[in-house]
Image (tube, helix red, strand yellow):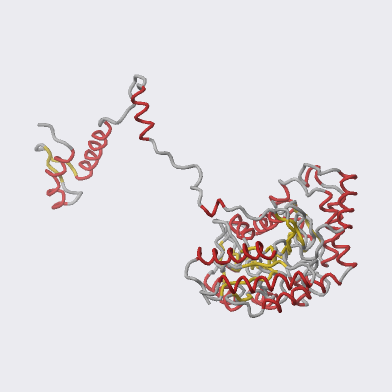
Length: 481
């Protein structure tokens, strides 16, 4: 009778265990060394599995019955997830420009859903600037800046931004969100350390992921948490002093409306020797006496900030983004920033509109004052709103309302907030938005209702919005307060 590999193992296992691998096994009366025995055993097992029959398709063509049977048994995975009822909901569609007043379904509404902080959307001087640029340059260059995509208006816009902020140089990006996508990976690489606020918006989070650096998040706008995080990073990591180290924060957080305490950030930066990357998308043109942003708001020299980025689609009512700082910071991005090197340049008419918007801002400092007054009016109007509380900073153009008492379910919280927003629009023609996030956004901050205040809003617009929200919130949240 032929022996299988298993029979051989059983017949010799006791002898091998008694004497160890160095002992001599006895197979068919022949003494074999332990190492040689193991080699033969592995060879037999290998041959045993190689000669086993495996499934092979028949050489003949499949019959129709066999094809039908295989098709019936095949259960492919869906290419897209199933459509839920929530996905079928259609958000309001703006049928006119996103100014302080807009049109939805043929009806005029007060718009608090667009980041038109200075009321520049539809501004006559900006429209004239765009028209002139279109007539002179056409729609766009259709090429990256480093090849044939640079036009004089791009250089003028970069110089205008640097002059306005008091920095050495600036660099333009053709898309606001890609500014953070590209600037962070241009400076931070694999192995570097980035300490970031957990509340940063998705564009920043995506840039952090693309950098492949070691990302450490601290509690939202909590300077004690930031201090302890910087302390642990520098104390526990012996190589930390040799690595590039960054603190990444927003001036005005898009997900909460909070303002970062820049003076404390600078103090911690200098103590632990980190660089600061500051996103001023929601503070440029808004904070400070003349709208020069967070540094002017806190009276901090702009040179204290290593890298400043901002989207131009908010206060300047155009598109694109910029990064500003020292000449070395800007020159480095011209060679290593993917959003600059590989993207078509910003259309010239948008760069021209940005220049004009900064000119108008400097010529009309009352715009910033009017915006601050409007924020104060909406704060006063929303004070004591039932079931909701204002979670944003009093100087922030993003007024953020969150539930005072959670239902215990994230979906139920979102449904309540959306119900309030829907009823405010339907009953009083006031457009507000809830803070929705994609499935890729891991921001842990609570959801809420956002009102984006503009200098273009009248006092009656602000009172109408606050009165509507107070009445509707009181009705919807009556059973939860």
